[in-house]
Image 1 (cartoon, helix red, strand yellow):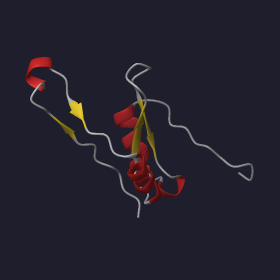
Image 2 (image 1 turned 60 degrees about the horizontal axis):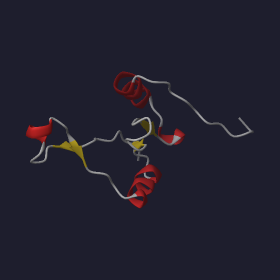
Image 3 (image 1 turned 60 degrees about the vertical axis):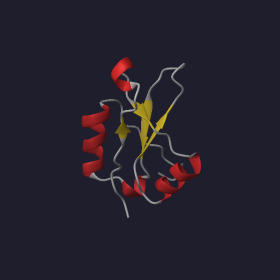
Length: 86
């Protein structure tokens, strides 16, 4: 089954003081399992680097709705990796 993910962002007690949102990160094993199940996942780098993220989705689960979501919400390049046969 393929589905588009929902990213949960929550406020902690320091949000009102700092104005920053806090996000909970999942364990890498859970992310891999979600990816295998056809869910779109968000992979982020360290805040000391570029502090950005990439949306990942298995090609078998790619749909017009998923492409539209990526284009509308992420507003970056949409890339595809191919094997030599393709």
